Structure formats: structure tokens, C-alpha cells
Length: 153
Image (cartoon, rainbow, N blue to C red; front, side):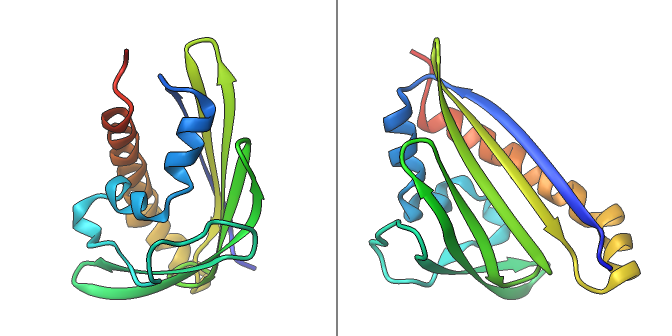
């Protein structure tokens, strides 16, 4: 049985919840939130109407290896939360919830990613040597990009 991992991040954004949710509900903004080294590209025709059961196809490149990734929006509850789940891609399992709560100085955004890697013990080794740090780096970049998109007032 594959080992399930969890990544959790929380960020305070100096903007109203509806505005923050609207930004995250536009698939084209994913390119702004993804580090350039991943060569992220949306393959689904834009604009994409975000809703439950919407499928979105991407391409990423890691170490010169291109990978297609298909996700499905499995929950859609504006402006509180949405969930994307991998249907096809580099992970054995990927479940990413995006939660938005009103806060005194704006919006508290929380990302929770639960994921599994393929290849059993080799996947666990890859997680320890590469994947865990890679995901931290991606979400660090994302945090900075969100700060740039919503500068403090």
C-alpha cells in the first residue's frame, strides 16, 4: 500500500475573500502561481468555466521530462472552497483543497494537499530525496506570487 503524505499551508491575504476566490477560480492564474522551472502550461482551451466536475489538462516539465496532468474539480463552493483531484498525472493520488475564510485584515487561505506517489518503496525514496522538497519549493514560490498579486494595503 502506498504511503499518503500531507502538505498544509496557510496564508493571510490583504484582500476580501470574494476577490481572492475569484483570482483562484481563474485557471489561467495557475501559470502565475507556478515556478517557471516547471514550464507549466494549460492545455485546456481558455477561458475555463470553473465548476464541479470541470476537467482541466496541464503540461509540466520536470528535469526535461514533459508530463501531462489532468485534474477534476470535485468540489466547488464559492467563495469558501474548492477541491481539485488528479485524474491522470505524476502522482498515484492527489487531492488539493483550497479553503478561504474571512479574516480581520483580509482573507485566510489554506491549502491542504494529500498525495501518494507510485512505485511503492521507490516512490517513498523519491519523496524523501526529491518530491517533498520540490513541493515545498513550489508552494514557497506560490506564496510569494500570491503576495505579489495582492500587495499589502
